[in-house]
Length: 215
Ligand code: 1Q0
Image 1 (spheres, rainbow, N blue to C red):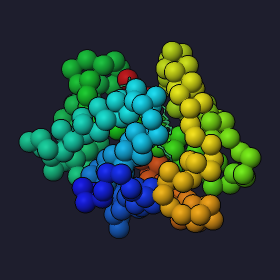
Image 2 (cartoon, rainbow, N blue to C red; image 1 turned 60 degrees about the vertical axis):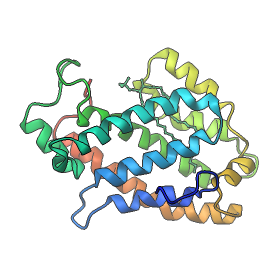
Image 3 (cartoon, rainbow, N blue to C red; image 1 turned 180 degrees about the horizontal axis):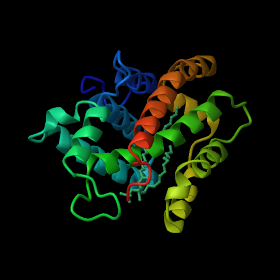
């Protein structure tokens, strides 16, 4: 991803990253997952500094994951499946309240996972939107149906205010740098199934191990 020029990148490459997360036996590669978020954050930063409180938190979580990946036991973090197994087997996850392991891979990734649901909902709204649809409304609706339930009132307030600063649909599509509206819609249609698949597999993994409410 370093070879992609800072200014003019296409969101297509970002969304395609989520496709490369999936291994043949339906495991999810941590590296590609984190890379996908890196690209999304870069895109969000190009939308203006009003979103910086969001991107700060996202960058922070990305950094925590990278530290795990580069650590002594980095090989255990190759896939989300191996991460969950490793951290649970070695009691590296705070299950009741944040204590000895406030930055476990499991709890950190869960935050990104919840945000991925927002992305899935938002992209689907964009894909099926019409010329007079408002990005701020689509974004807010997607947020209220996903991430909002995990956020304190003050964060919900700040997020909803920031969404109002989103560019209109036409300008937003342009920033994505994918081409015409038809091309954007086609690209979203291509990328969505992979994002949904990644979300679904992660959700199932976390559910199986009772990790969906990690503090
Ligand atoms: C373009 C608009 C971007 C909207 C992003 C929606 C997410 C809003 C989240 C706002 C909350 C951020 C402040 C911090 C919250 C944390 O308290 C919370 C919990 O963490 P913790 O450690 O306190 O338990 N953190 C989170 O919930 C994680 C939030 C991560 C957000 C990641 C957003 C990444 C950017 C995405 C830009 C995508 C633009 C996509 C457009 C695609 C168009 C085809």
